[in-house]
Length: 306
Ligand SMILES: Cc1cc2nc3c(=O)[nH]c(=O)nc-3n(C[C@H](O)[C@H](O)[C@H](O)COP(=O)(O)OP(=O)(O)OC[C@H]3O[C@@H](n4cnc5c(N)ncnc54)[C@H](O)[C@@H]3O)c2cc1C
Image 1 (cartoon, rainbow, N blue to C red):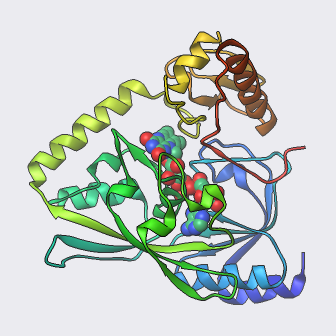
Image 2 (cartoon, rainbow, N blue to C red; image 1 turned 60 degrees about the vertical axis):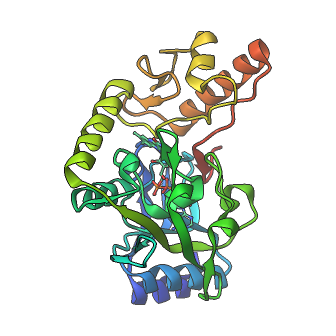
């Protein structure tokens, strides 16, 4: 790693070297990040990204690590943890209420805060871990709603640190897809998103949150995981295919397809990324052989796996 770059990053924000990513991601697996920068402000996020890119280093933007599988070999270049936290609004704009939210803000925490304050629109997100930036990349959603339904705009930055405003159409949001996952947008960082909210009744909204919490408690297994491993194919949910392929509860090393929800892989303690990849490949092979269906990963694979 370029020591001059490390010095420049240190002048900008807190930097750690060889930081184990298993400490950070929800799966609890993965090797070290060569350089790990903690961005608490939008300028640190924007400039940290730009400095690293101009020095020719690959950059991994880390929101909350709830949708990534980091390879056992770790991540080369610069990993930027996004801890930006600013929330502006909601303020009335005639048609409803607009909030501008930093990409490092927790989607679930925002959903709870807005619901308690009597703003509706994102209550369905109260149980989705992760940052707003990560939610844009996968168009996070639940209960037939997704970020696409409430996103009115976003601000991104590029390699040169320029700020670019994008419309919802530019982001190409669809079921667990965006212009990022399609590759239409690359080498950009989401800085903030604009959300459209409505006035709601906080008592009714709190009741909705309780219902959503209860649904998750019964449907999802506790423990270290990344949520759904595969996207749902059109005809049946992925868990159904995995179960039909005889893989519910199947274990490789210390990784297991959950007994409670077969589209979740659990790290039973000390799992390696290689165990998880082996389970994913086994499910893809068996489901394709038996049903001709291709299971497409929802989780993003990051770093070195061999
Ligand atoms: C228990 C559990 C339940 C879950 N339930 C759901 C659910 O119901 N619905 C759902 O949709 N998802 C669900 N997920 C998956 C996950 O919560 C979402 O995908 C979430 O939006 C990921 O956000 P993150 O900040 O953790 O992203 P990360 O995992 O940190 O990153 C994901 C990807 O986005 C990129 N990225 C992150 N931030 C930025 C940024 N600012 N700019 C550019 N790129 C960025 C990363 O580089 C990476 O490629 C669940 C996960 C868990 C662990």
